[in-house]
Length: 277
Image 1 (cartoon, rainbow, N blue to C red):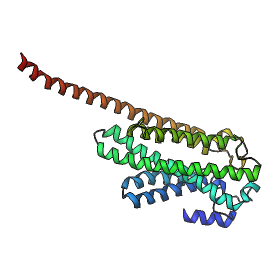
Image 2 (image 1 turned 45 degrees about the horizontal axis):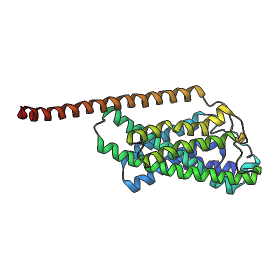
Image 3 (image 1 turned 90 degrees about the vertical axis):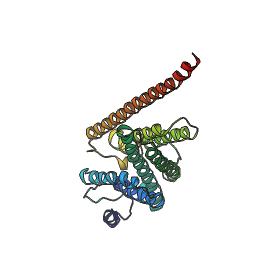
Image 4 (image 1 turned 180 degrees about the horizontal axis):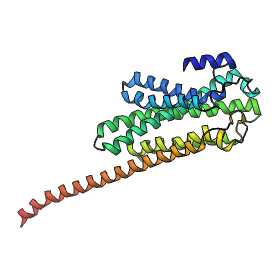
């Protein structure tokens, strides 16, 4: 990651060229995981981060729109190094946080699918996941506000319901509502694991969909082609099938535990009834 960023600075004049967001997200996933690993000493952060960071590097290498060998000057709106240096890293680090939470969510759902009796491990993983989601919401909120201020200076308005702005706000709401639901007791560990996986689709739409699918709005400097929509759609579909399988397994396990508890209660009542007779 260091060589890529240094090379990018040497050619474009800054570390935050808009077409390198995949590289920055991969770097952010690894960096955030290392920070949480130092704090909590939990191996699961690195376990979730490693495949995601590698995937980002593979995507950066395979997609021509990311590591484009051609050198072109930045569009005028991106030549403001001050706002570019605080808004873009904040947004990409928020995406990295949500990606790391998605990785942890997969690990949690994997436990529900294969080892639903691991209550303590699932509880610890859920706490780790919750902290990462909080960091992601904080960063995305800050990034949206900073982007609005930059838009005010560049385009003369703080908010204009541009597709990029709108989907960033949708992604923020997709995470804020479940976090508040967890706070008031509406969602438990399983629900938060599902949310961390499913809601990342909103981040994908804000990050990838607006650039490669919609292709409209003032953020035209990020638009491109060759984004392999079919591959992305297939991966999203497989991911949702994984969530559905984990949910089915979790519901069956809950039903079996309820049946066992009911049998135990009935077996305790039978001796009492026999004594009364």
